[in-house]
Length: 230
Image 1 (cartoon, helix red, strand yellow):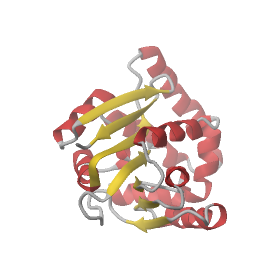
Image 2 (tube, rainbow, N blue to C red):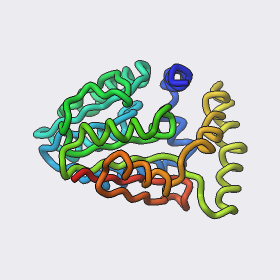
Image 3 (cartoon, rainbow, N blue to C red):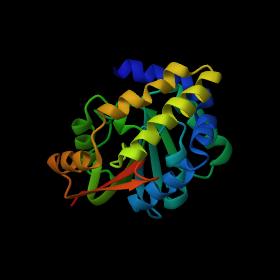
Image 4 (cartoon, rainbow, N blue to C red):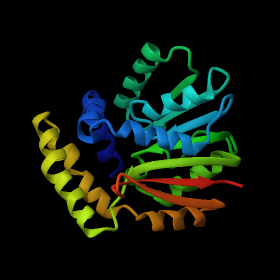
């Protein structure tokens, strides 16, 4: 399963940012800004962005921590990381960002290393969500927060129907025209397997986080899980 997901993200890497803009009508930028804000990253902090993809959240973290801070971007897709590195060199040469290929279920960091963390559209794709959150808890400092953005199934049945229509009739056809039908058709079944916001909160508390809150956004079609380590 992990290799299959890695292959998907390797294949879509060249068009990933373009498709995100098109399929979300640019709204993903707002959701990512909200996520970074909820992480409470501040100047001078050392932060990590898990499942960093092409670097959007990592760059936003870097702007918050300033040159006095440090950001690590972690992903298991070498193709995505190459794009993130090139974007960093072109647009963010003044920011201290280190991109590395690693497994979020077994992070190559010391305990209590980070002041804040983010994750965008990655938790839904890991094979062991509790283990991922447990690793995140381990590498965060006491008092640190993490914010995790992902798709979410709305509680309202009409919104759930609209979301499914949006995925089936807009997302997949647009991706198909670019030659990536199978790569984007996986979103719907991955959502069916993904824990609800309440379930995510329960798992986060079980692995050791002191507080956990899930914020539905975009009419409940997206959500941000915010967790704190005390």
